[in-house]
Each structure stands twice: as C-alpha cells, then as structure tokens.
Image: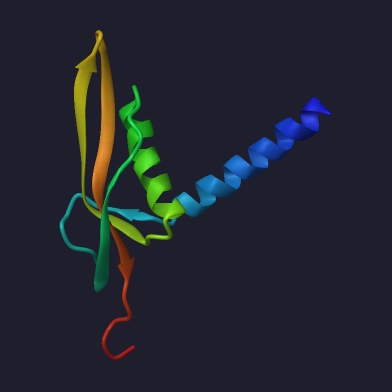
Length: 99
C-alpha cells in the first residue's frame, strides 16, 4: 500500500514538472513573441538557487502563464544560511499579427 502511494506521488510530481518545463523564463524584459503582462510573481524561497528558479517556474505554470520575463534571483543571509528567491513578471503569449 505504501508503494502505491509513493508511486502516485511520484507520478503527480512528474506531471507538475512536465507542466512547468514549458514555461519560458528570461532575464530579458521582452519575450520572443507578443505577450500580455499579467502579474509580478515571487517564487518560494529556498536554500538552493536552482530550486528557487524551479519554484518560480512552477508558480507560473500553476497560474497558467506561458513565460516569466525580467526574471531575477536575489538572496539574503538568514541565521548563517543563504535564502534565495526568484521573481519576475508572469505573461501570457498573445496571437501574433497575421497568424
């Protein structure tokens, strides 16, 4: 029974990762196509900067955004441990003129 629950959790995690993998993240303030700016996003803080980036991408995917533009990473010291947080502007691609 524990193995089935563990397998279901792994399958859910893989689905979440697959959805987030399609989110375009760029430090540039513009995207490769026309977009509608939706909101500023701040991912969950983490000890690992790579995980902070992944948290931002996942947050964008959860909100149905296609990209995060102007993305940045910041950190601060918390009791001797660095904390990282990624943030940027969540956007949705818009239809391109003539398409």
